[in-house]
Image (tube, rainbow, N blue to C red; front, side, top):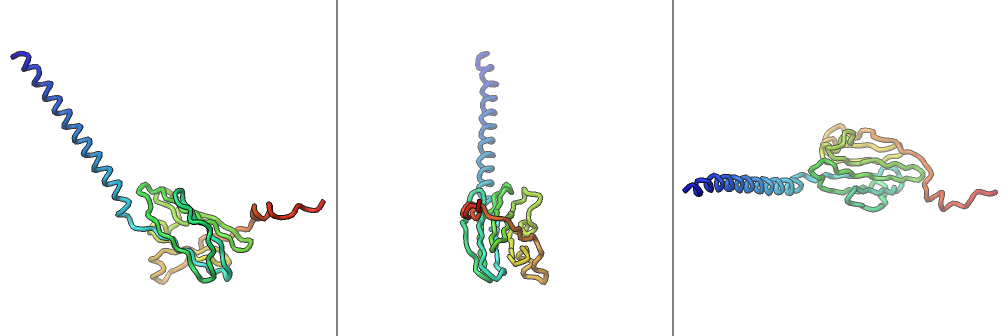
Length: 172
């Protein structure tokens, strides 16, 4: 009898430990499910770039996971892409722009983890108007209201590396 008395507290502790492990596994499965479906519940983010330069422009957009390639946007045409931002707020899309000798590159959409992100990133939709004097930004809500474009960045001019590599050597 004495032996059975000693086994009972041990069996009770073992059952409690098993119950705690079961609760831990249950909590882990629920957490993984919530994290896995959160990305699907989030709304799509949109970037739309519109060319008002009077000539075609070259645009190359990419993130850590996706390279959308270099594309030409004709006069008064646009280039739009959609994506789902990750739940950690670290999604970042950069675009480089070329128009004649004018160039510029900047993040066109940044997740909530970035303090200096474009204001339109907070709403999920970023509209960019590319003009001869620079870049203008708006949100989808602004596009539906009276206030529309806000000046965002100027063009910068620099010599392209390809131009240096492909140019003939200077005369001696």
